[in-house]
Amino acid sequence: MNFCSDNVTGVAPEIMAALADANKGVAMPYGDDECSQNLQTKFSYLFEKEVTVFPVVTGSAANSLALSVMCPPFGAILCHTQSHINIDECGAPEFYTGGAKLVTLAGDCGKLVAQDLQNTIERAGIGFVHHVQPATISITQASEAGTLYSKAEIEQIAEIAKTYNLNLHMDGTRFANAVASLGCSPADITWRAGVDILCFGATKNGAMAAEAVIFFNRALAETFGYRRKRGGHLLSKMRFVSAQLDAYITNDLWLKNATHANKMAAKLAAGIESLLVVKLCYEVQANEIFVQLPELVIEKLIATGFAFYRGEYNTVRLVTAFDTQAADVDAFITTTRTCIDNNYNAIASSTLG
Image (cartoon, rainbow, N blue to C red; front, side, top):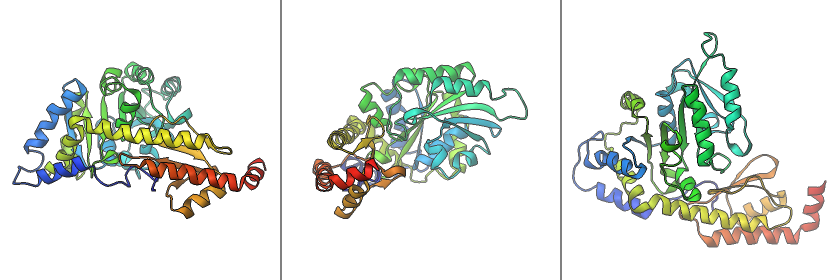
């Protein structure tokens, strides 16, 4: 009954089996094994375009190393205030870029707004030696609010990036959940929409520890191999990372897992949204739910054994995963409903007060 995150889970059986297979025999190190080499072809097929792929083991490394080839030390990375690279990377993007500045913008539902980006860039002092120079825009798909950028929204942002000669980076930790929800091809909301580099997440969707940095603009990949090595992410036994990614995209496991997680989130959202004195903070579009609950309900849920993260104003975040059980979702809804019914007068009085 742990809804803290989609990385509290174990490993998907298909990926664990692939790791066991990769453990048989010997293989060349540092990505020269057959599985690692084949990823280029397999990801190119998946994205309907020849791409360059680099496996790494964490999302922090994927994002930070990707940004290091997209932004010079005197550059600016434009991102949302709530973005993971701004809040949760412990300064790694600044470190790996050699000191680039994160310029944050607000935006409803965790998303950047194209017009706000344009206004910020126009006021940035392009060519003025005393100011950091806009170099990259970074968007998160799905966003930190669990919302999604549509193809049209990405295209609008990409057009601004192109107009001002900026790169466009996509943090795709939950990219699979976005594709599953939007019902589009992975190509449609990446390179076809104008994305230069995608950090393609797998760890939160069934892998043990595996992410892929995918270059659609392959010219940007020229120095990435050296940066990955210098950053400590060129693994000697890279086959064990590549095997996870191979299994992840084989037979659409990545979409199957994400579809289940999204379905459980939709079920959970529908159940709690129907209750009185409960308020969803954002539309539920992927596998994250942000909801304001009365304190009495939160205390009851915790006492019952449910786990989740709390924020301000009695907001809790609930995240479903590839192996979330429908019974746990039902239990959460039932516990919440029962607590509200049994304490409605006290809750209503507290809420109105």
